[in-house]
Length: 86
Image (cartoon, rainbow, N blue to C red; front, side):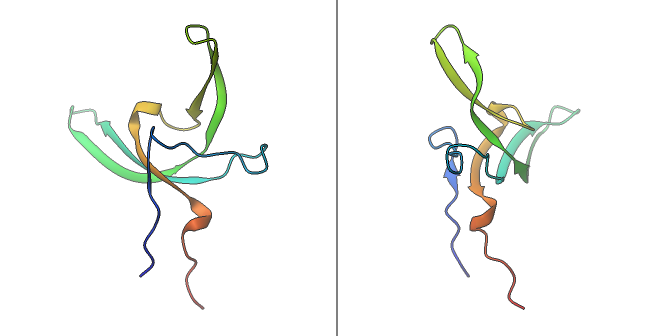
């Protein structure tokens, strides 16, 4: 079995492909459900490293498209996952 290179967020963040396109990522998330219980799941998302300008630090900060930054724990590029053998 191939070992996947999961990266810890926010220690490592995805980079844009060719400086332009956001690459699809598979992400591990943690969140509280409606009953206040801590849940974990694996899903997908895109990361934009210049999504929002922060006046406090006078720079852009990154943001995930589908989840809050504090929900993401780990990520991997979707194209790093081996395809099934035919």
